[in-house]
Length: 218
Length: 274
Image (cartoon, rainbow over all chains, first blue to last red; front, top):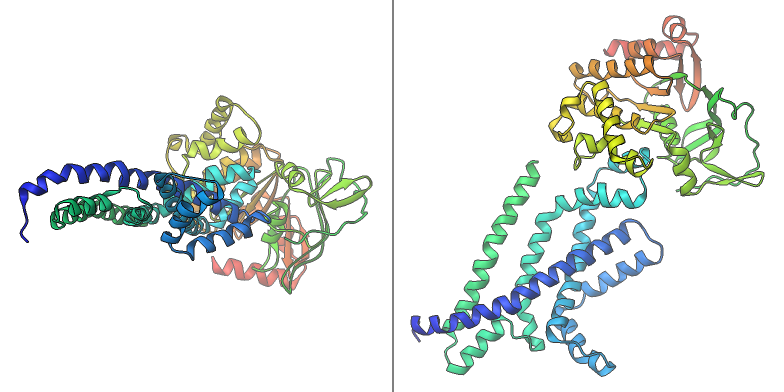
């Protein structure tokens, strides 16, 4: 089998379309969900909210200990039998977002732990309300310090979006396989899909490494 | 956090008039098995400037941290301006204070830390204005104007838009002093404020504090190893060892002709080290 440039050119727009329409959209939405929910989890645990904090910890452990495909299947195939039918895209964003929020929570926690004790004490000395300490003093410093780690998780989530083919989301890899199946030529379609992943994630990874260095020296 | 026991102690004699702004009444503080303060009694009058000296581990810093509510009280009572700090009144009884009560009493007290503890994510101006705006409810214009005045006073009006990491340690500490003063505290706690500074920066910070001591009647509790400064600004020096007051008196007495061998040895060691 030899590489056919003409064929590759023909199928490229369809694969790129699937990438933008599904892979990218899921990554962006799921990252936003993970970043928000993870922060909520981290603050609940950091503030030692009674009852809720241990429940959050248990939930995080549960989610992190089960594989993404099971979570996808469960939400997509089991929930409808309980009367709740969700679209594949919705389930994809929800599962990836919640799954990664559990990792984000740990990252935020490390960031929060790294804010010096003196910052909290200065807040006490100035009588600042608890809420303000979190929103204006502790979290801005914590998040700044963990930005590279958060970015790296976005990249690894991005690379897990092909799992969504399990619940029939026509994301890029699924689309490439479908195109391959129609013409019995898989080489071009899968190579293009792989290259798109590479082109999108490599510069991002390099940028995160640079950011890490800069924050480290700041 | 250990909470103090419920008790039925009356307001101590004199703690309601302006005479005794701070009252420590049989204060006990332990860290694990280590008793840092044992049945400590002392009072500080309004406007008085008191320097606490003594070897490390003698409990001086713990006294400041208890007043700032950074450490919890194990036993006894602390009164600030006629109000119990770690307790609140319920009928004629005192019960452990809740967060709202602590916040209330706390606004009368300001503290400057050894490590400055400025907020690195805020400009110098915002470091000073945030608490007056958020806690005291001042308008931004008013808080800004007061911050400008304070910065002028500590000689840093040119740095108003700088961030803490662009300042020297001495400058950061002067901003921290301005930040504490912006809350208009009755009591200012100074916890080894020059210990983390390079020697050439110490004089600038002490100069600012001398000026504040001369021009205001803010009550000060000072923990320092700068004995000249202590001698110049304080009305009273208290020598601590093992969580208790070894001796106390006017600076001339303590630094000139102290009674106790322990004090003599300590001062000798500190002055030697300089």
